[in-house]
Length: 331
Ligand code: DGY
Image (cartoon, rainbow, N blue to C red; front, side):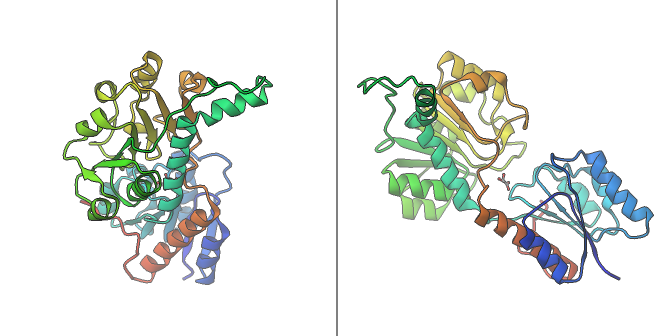
């Protein structure tokens, strides 16, 4: 029987073509904004009622794949392929119980997320966004030695929290390219970081909070990393420090960050992700020492195509009885 795949939203055609080339039938959501869990479950249940249940589902990081979703998907669905490196939107335990394989797209876009991280850091230290707005508003009346004075990166310290592929690339750009001292914290040591980029391992993130001028977040969202940046940890940082988050919103307690920025506890923040995404604190939006982007760190054609290819290949592998490259292991 023809295998049926539910792709919850639009993804680059390259992934869809791969699935079609295998003869699979594709049902693709046409939602303009992230669908609710109920909307997705309705599609899954309708397919079941029609006697044409899905064999695989390709989800996005905005799709809530919890016990209800898994229950609707089982027993026909063999794999849920997440079009993302993060998979905090999926209940691994429930999927495991239902015998559903979960996959992600590891390493597909480490480079572009690292570059976006560096862009946010530069935007803050050069005051790029503020200066751009100043010029556009017609406020520039002539050269001024005191206008938009920024800060250097060279010889300063960057603290990387989370030393996976992305953290490693950020360390490479800033350590090798900008002569920054690199400190890092992770639950396990990263030899490449230490050997290639001279990074100093910190067994405790507090060392980083106290010493770093730039604190860059690259940890996955786990119970242990939720609100890692909070009132207490912000208070340990230098008044001149900036925090950059291209990982997951809830790693930073947004309320505490807003307070810290208002009171000058730290100097600035660059955020691509938000605790209550897509909702963003109104106060953050008014601050000039903050640069905000709408979760676009991986938004490059190359990365998106690679993610689509990996997500499709994961489905093909599982449906053909092979081990997928993006297999997420359940602890
Ligand atoms: C991911 O895939 O986890 C990223 O957040 C997408 O930018």
